[in-house]
Amino acid sequence: MKKRITQVTAALLIVSSSFCMFGCKSEKVVYRDDVEEEKGPVITRKAVSDAAKKLEAVECGYDELEEKIKNMERGSYFLNASGDEAQKFYDDRFNVGITPEYDVSELTLIYSNTRTDGDSALTNIWYICFDDEDDAEGLRDFMFEHSSLSDEIRTRDDITYKIWTSDNGFDGVYQEGDKVLVIKAVTTGEWNFASEFCGSLGIDVPVEE
Image (cartoon, rainbow, N blue to C red; front, side, top):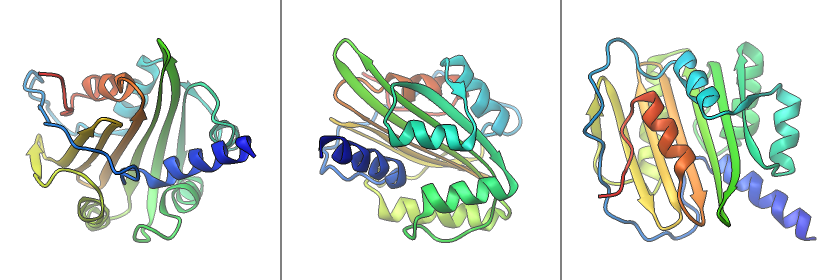
């Protein structure tokens, strides 16, 4: 029974993406202001994959990552999918009848389940490239409206985004052109993986004052 509850919790965390399900108390958000001006697109598959590798995430195949998520394995892993495989992973793991149905061409999922000094952190990062920029904006607006993100919509380097922090972790939704990046970290301590990922990619993230 305990194993079953754990698996269900893992699945909910994956499909919930940026939706807060824990009645978290929000804290003040402090934004990065030390990021150099970027030239060209910031949210790209290569940038996301490079950031995952920098954080020592291991690249997996579709079935392998499914098994790791199901068993809530410790460690950091990521999947790059294109075409039909990307669409299947979006439909099966991200959409599940909650978000609008869109056609996607690329998808990267980073899954990290770590423990440091007795604190656990479960992080899911979705990079989704849509066939149409209007679809990317549609998902962005849907998640802005139906999540616990802050009310303030911000823009920088052609990225439109909202980010939010709480006692339990960090949520962020970023849209640039036909690409959307969704980050959710749930933790009993610090959300270092999510913070370091954002720093590596060069996008805003809440930081301590």
